[in-house]
Image 1 (cartoon, helix red, strand yellow):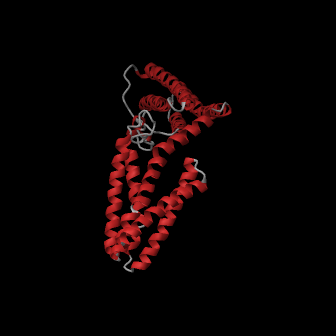
Image 2 (cartoon, one colour; image 1 turned 90 degrees about the horizontal axis):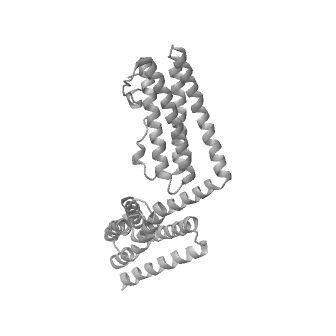
Image 3 (cartoon, helix red, strand yellow; image 1 turned 30 degrees about the horizontal axis):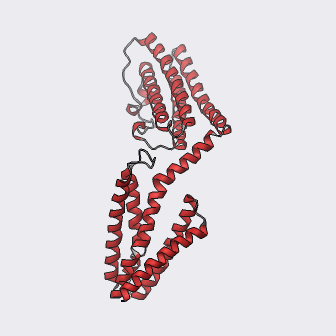
Length: 317
């Protein structure tokens, strides 16, 4: 249905259902964030109460003009409205992302009320819709004011630090563990096969098998190690997927050069790729895990060199 085809009764019914949906979304955000981000949860509780007040005023106007029955007309039934992702499936939403979605919802609501007011002929209804449009605009400023108050109190700084910590626990840590395992543990079988056979094709097959096998093994190990409920490390299957993929990528990095048919060129490139991989791992450890750069380089390089030497010795023996 097009927005221009809606009559006044349908416009009010749509406004009522939209306010109810927005209120539920804000409460879902608050419930999801309350444990780790109480300041942001408080903001969404206040916004949900405001939406409830709007719905009550719209319902009173509708009942006075059209009676008790309110037809169910939702935003997704009308062309031109942004369809919101169901908030109940967004269990790991970050505070800044929730605030961004709320800002878009407020802007959309304001534009809807402004457009609905222009199409309404009855003075009381037009006045209410214009008032609600102005209140939606004030919501944007009120949310910013609350954010400033919370920032001044240090609450948002604590939330940002908590958000960073959860990002590290849920994404960086399993990804880093996989990248380290894939980049280091596959060195021995890859270079053992390389120096034992001097065949790029055979070496590539061994490296590919080692990378894929390690990825599957690490993915399952990470997913089964912790359900995330007490540690706050998030969904097990997502951590396992991240860890498995990064393990495979780490192993494939120095395996792909052996697609080059010239053995010595392929080996030199593979060694260069290993050096880049170890440097990336050291940087991630410094940036996200607060490890001193010299210490991170020393730990990663020493481990990588030892594994490389083990592969070289075994392959050359």
